[in-house]
Length: 358
Image 1: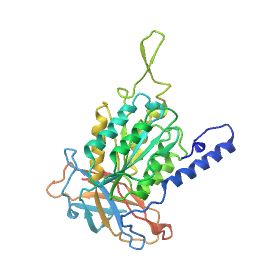
Image 2: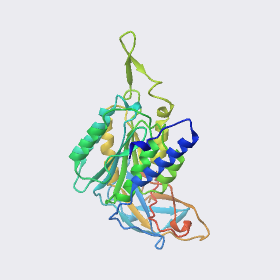
Image 3: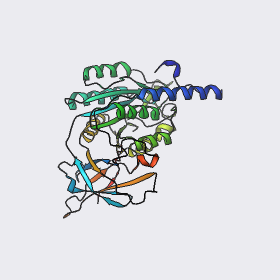
Image 4: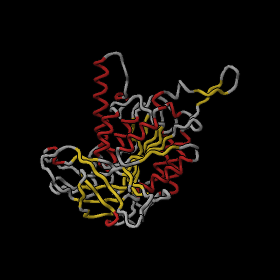
């Protein structure tokens, strides 16, 4: 992204509007139109895919579930499941790393978390993208790569200095768009490390949420906003370190956990809170495992009323036989918009939802 499109707030409404339009165009162009190897379902087949994360009563990834173990409802009507794919596989993941000024003392933790994942969980055919952001998002890698050493070097080179404001919404929008268009693997997602605040995005939270609800990419966030991690110290006149709060940790950062919950919930992902520095690598590993072990359930919607248009609600249950699945938990998106509700537009349908099994 050229430097001249950086977000700059000026007193002139016309200049501000021009810059907003320019940055909007650049972000959209950066998303690209890369080819994907994944089959796309169109409105003519009306086949819906539901990406589901299943955890057992111990909070571990639930494996071995089959089509007979799930029930799917659309708009309250039970659907016939055509297929349930559950094989773990290689991943396509975008790292989204916050290097704004509120992260000033914590960039080493961000780097450590990313490096640990690449060193301990990388498998053949995995691929990664990298987005870094402060006052504006930057797509460091325009294409996916499986070269972990190159990726680690780029992280080291770009996550160096924390400065500027926070364009969280723009960064997630950019990352999700690139994963959606360019990922070659069925198992795909975005992992964000941030304090959750947004102070400088062109996209609003509402616009970002609407896009995430329709995308096929779960977002997982590491909420690094706990005081015992994100402390910022200055040396006062007494010569002693003093805890700095208002200048660096502002209202946007304090609202970070709520924002992250909304953003990840819209995708069927999750937000994890890092309470200690050593939590970050562990959370990154959990997010990787969740992305690589998603269930993909396919069904053809039963048409109840052809006049009904707009968003369709989805609910997924685990069938309760002898309380076999008591305490299990499912995450997935709650709704999707059917392409033929928009005049037959041919797009991929992926309704991943979020909820509890009973």
